[in-house]
Length: 225
Image (cartoon, rainbow, N blue to C red; front, top):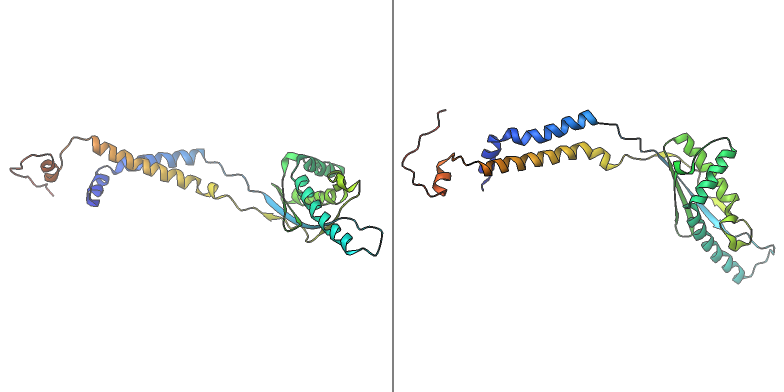
């Protein structure tokens, strides 16, 4: 089918094309609710080390094992930081500071980046998030022995590489394109509806359609303009 044939169909059935997207747009406007705020994120990085032995003169082999154990410590702390017990410990630390923050109200991500511990925390309120990350730093530094029984009760040394900086999270692409996608789907449905009605319509509207059906045309009355 030529493009001008499609043009003629949509020109005749333009109302059918427009009804679905208009209905979708009206429904979306009536039921529209502002998407929730995306929240805030903060990330911190740590270098982790095993406490040195009392001897001041460490042999090269002992220094090597000290560095190697530090890498295993980072792996263990990464697993602990994303667990529910860590979030509970952070919540308890905040409770001691007079702030009630349930463990399920914030999310924690952790990653071992080249033997460096990277923690990211998300929450809906910037001020509360700043307090959460400070409590998380305290828990990581003071309570990591509970998550590292291999150290025999000793506490690993965590060095904070950068100060926490709270930043707003960008809105998701799906929330921005929700209504436009609905309208686009409605428009596609309108186009399909117009083509379906045209296909089921038995009316002959042109000489070409009659000839395509095998009729011999004896005369033609032009449209009055």
